[in-house]
Image 1: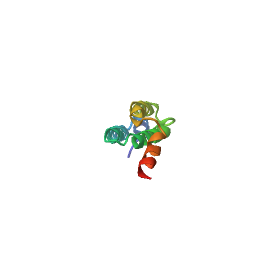
Image 2: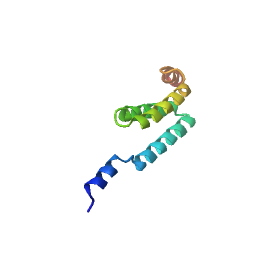
Image 3: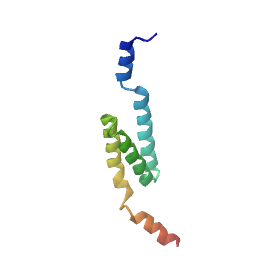
Image 4: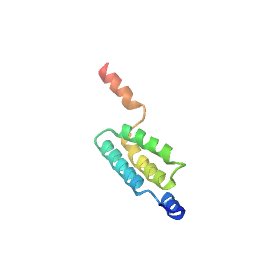
Length: 89
């Protein structure tokens, strides 16, 4: 049986699984941006930032930094979609 003290310790310990999943997501988003999908990567990083902002400031900082690194790769927001429509139609 788990004592109250050890259960409280486990609840308060940083989740290494969550940290690892966040690192996998950050690496994947960076790879997505590098593969030419920077707008999609930024949108997903922004969603992660939104979810983590109040829940985990440390993880939020990492995704916020990633978002700021990826955003210059997107070019002018709003013009990419317009350019595609012009070329396709």
